[in-house]
Length: 146
Image 1 (cartoon, rainbow, N blue to C red):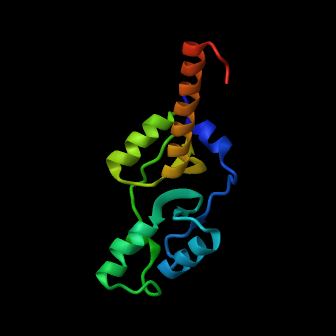
Image 2 (cartoon, rainbow, N blue to C red):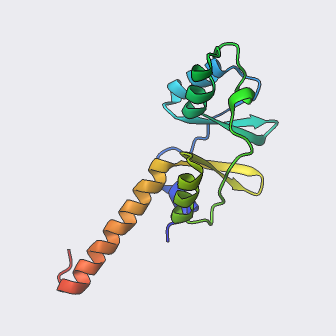
């Protein structure tokens, strides 16, 4: 089984981008655009206090007629944070993401953030594992290695 630790090891960039809760939504959007990411961790004094995503912006700011320059991230962020630990499986992450309708999961070791995984990371890993299992079955059935 693929673990969260495996997913983090496969990621091209281990960078974790964050923003302070008192930053403006506009500042968060600028950072997300610059880094080409869909969510930011919201950190206060080294502690994870929330997650701010494009979905939060669309549903809680734009659709409510709020100004991104006058609204603070803490007003829109998702909290409490749903997170996973390194030893949990990709399948477990997919179940959480599906049930909670979220696309990003912070990875915590104790209280320390060690990464973030996305629905894309999880999907790619599960598909790859299934393809490998199918190749192994074909080899077993036909006796012909691929």
